[in-house]
Each structure stands twice: as structure tokens, then as C-alpha cells.
Length: 361
Image (cartoon, rainbow, N blue to C red; front, side):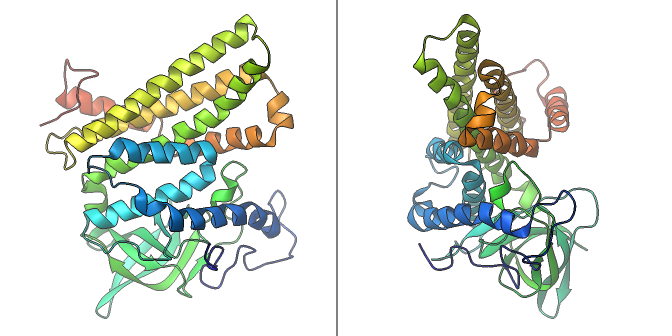
């Protein structure tokens, strides 16, 4: 592991700019947040150094293997998976849009959230670009050495590469108060005159074929988290013969997870069969797979909770964390909005072909 494993961003550290200060009402202290984030950062740094280069890019013939790696990370720890997925996604985006791959010792994130409100602006400055404003939900804020960041410009929304050690980059204190996914270290970050290198052109981040491929990678992480939650139910059933109600839940969870695994494997194979989306099915495939994964995770959370009761949530720290992490992470799915988009695509292009191959051309 490198000495940079828990390096800070800009002038901030894991303890932010107010170490030792009392928290606001209902706000976790800086020291508490740091204690949750440091171990994840160290494991992420070690994983990037030791294993990330072996993970295949999407569309190269081994995409199901890529999704299995992400699912395994999610089963181990969803916070670790969140950071690992970001680094792998950044690597794939750079490859697709003609950027240089991550170098030795570099840890990348993808900071592309655009919730309502003021965001990040890009403007030309001299012969280059600079970023100003606030970017929300920046996972790995204190451990990533680089990030791909979306920002609005006069030319439209663009993607930029930044070095996170620039003094104009500063996490906003108190903006990451989550219980679930706490260790993913995902605060808002302020940008002030930060130099940025454009990656691709205006609109390329969302319009590229690989965008929905990357979204399925996130779903693979969710499903790994669902397996971690389900492990508690399986372990409990293995200690004694389950009663009828527990057996029903165990059987249902098995059907859910095995079906989702099959869909994920098929999605990977379909991506390898049409990596550049010549047949136009990538968006439908991504929406379907993510929606199914979210539904499976939600049902697994419900069934495991009903089968095991409050005991594991109160007495098993690993299980309680797995439940809290998964509950937060799947909210990255856009729920009914994504289902509505899927329905509109089906109505407009695939009348009479519900559940078909998703091709729109």
C-alpha cells in the first residue's frame, strides 16, 4: 500500500477544516466520519494498486467477468465497491473518449451528479478551462488523486479531468452525514478556479455507447450488496431447520438472486456482442437491468428483514451495515423516472416486443 492511501484533497483532510469542533445538532463529528472513511480508503488504495488493472474493459469480450468483479466487491463491502466502480468506470470512459489511462499510483473517481440547484460551471480561461462552483456527491473525496467531473459550459455539459490535489478543490464541511454508505466519503466539493482538461466534446459523456454499460456496472455492485444481506438469512437457516415462513423467504431470495445473476451475465454478453451499440439496444438494456437489480435488492431487504427480525440488525454490526449501505446505494436508481423512460422507449420503438432484445434501429 502506498503512503498516499489516505491522502487529503486540496487543503482538507479526513477531519475537514474543523477538527475537534463540536458538531452541529444532529451532525456527525469530523472525527467520527474520518474513522469510517479511512479503512475504506486504505482498502481501495490497495485494491487499485494490486487488482484494478486486471479487470477487463466493457465490450472487449469479457464484460460478464467485469460485472462479477464488481458484484464480488459489493458483497465484500458496498463502500469499497462504490470507490472501485468509480475507478473502473473512469478507466473505461478515458479509454472510450480518447484520454490517457490512469497512471501508477493514481486513483480516479467519476463525479457526475446533477441534482437541482447551483452546480459546477466550466469556462475557458487563457488557453484552457477552469471550473468554479460546487459539485455534490463526490465519492472518494479524500482518497482519489484524480476525478472525471461533469460541468455546464456555454457549449453544453462537458466532462473534464482534474487533479484533486489542487488548492482550489475543497470538500464542503458537513455535507456527508449518511449512515448507510458512510465510508464512501461522498461530500459536496467546492471548486475555485480549478484547471481542468476536457475529455471528449460537449455531450459526449452521456451520448457515448458506454454510458449505459457503466450503469449496469453500478447495478452489479448493488446485487453484490444484496448477496451480503442474504448471507445472514442463509447462515441462520443453516444453524437449524428453518420453519415454514423462513423457508419461504429463503426460497424466494434464492430465486431473486439467481435470476438477477442470469440477467447480469446476459447483459454482459449482449454488450460484448454489440459494444458500440450499432443496434441501439444499450439504453433499454441498461434501464431494464438497473430496474431489475433495484427491485431485487428491495425485495431481498424486505424478505431478509421479515425472516430474521430485529436481531441481526441490532446485534450483528456487519449485517446492520450491509442493510444500511444497500438501502442508501440503490437510491442512486431513479425509480419511477427510469421506469417511465423505459416505458416511453418501448412505446415509441418496440410496440409488441415487451421483453425483447431492446434493439431500436
